Length: 325
Image 1 (cartoon, rainbow, N blue to C red):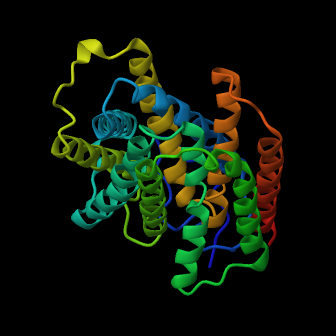
Image 2 (tube, rainbow, N blue to C red):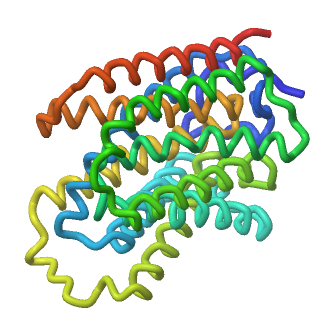
């Protein structure tokens, strides 16, 4: 059973809908999508597509999990403070069960998902990392199928078409020398991210979606810092040797990658069909490839143009399936 998405995203100063109440659905469900959903999707499409480049610049002089954990923890604290300031302390109060749910999702999405992507980008190009992350929709569809939900043929066809487009995009990159450890890390990240996204709509989360996102970032970021310390990333770290461009990239990731885009993603998970939300993984690689061409002068080859066109067509197919009632 689904309900129409809200007409606008809840402002931080207003109480948002409870998890699952506004447009939450399994793969293939059809809902009426509002302008707020399209705006949030646009944020996730563009901003998260740009984060792969920013991550690559960050890890030039900053360690993987320490930078990823710091990014999420700082963004979470800022968001939590903003919610409490705009709506009052009651807005950030949660039950023990709700906090535990947010913590679990935060560890899966941020410690595992984001942290492993950052680790992988130490040894593989940012564009390849974005292409690998595009398998997330497939895992999400498989998870919904395992839960007993049969996706509509058009939605499943969109996923398969998107994967075909990504195969065309990734073929030239995979033909060269690629570090296996980096590829394995990013693939593992896609599994944990899909699991966290799937779980978030099926467990008792905090009613305030922004508070929920803040707790996810705080716990996920804290866990990421612990992983970084356990890996010994602090040894030999000299903050004075960190480049200005790495600091600026990290700041961009905190504000736009985490505070803005992750909050939009968390809201989408409770306000739009899962298969529609997952289409960001098709668009992000296209954005990442275009940024690589514009910023790093990477070649824009025929396979990239063809694969990008196929990816866009797949997104249109999945979106049109979600819109029809």
